[in-house]
Length: 132
Image 1 (cartoon, helix red, strand yellow):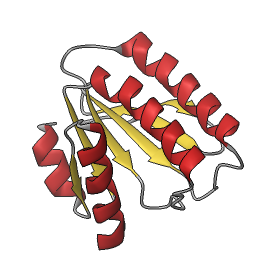
Image 2 (cartoon, one colour):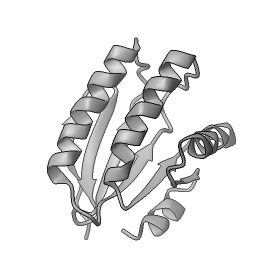
Image 3 (cartoon, one colour):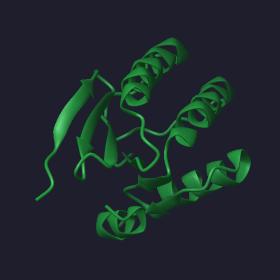
């Protein structure tokens, strides 16, 4: 049986270690980032926690279902920098979204940054893809 341990929490993100230590679940809250500085601080703290746990077989499931989307240029540039720093730490990455619009948004981001990940509204499908 897999356990879930909370390893980081902020107003915007909660990280869990699960899948017998092979999965980081990155859960976005419904609280929007007030500015890019808050986004960068949150991701920086999360990155430090993940980096301390880093192993070659670690996978990441990002649960974006509650997050409020933003697409202003400054925010998009910041998230691109943060993704390209954090995502390479993982063997596989998957994004759980609420809607087809969310799926299309993350598929666009994948084309832009070239970092492979599966995007779906089906959590079970993503967990099978991650093999955890």
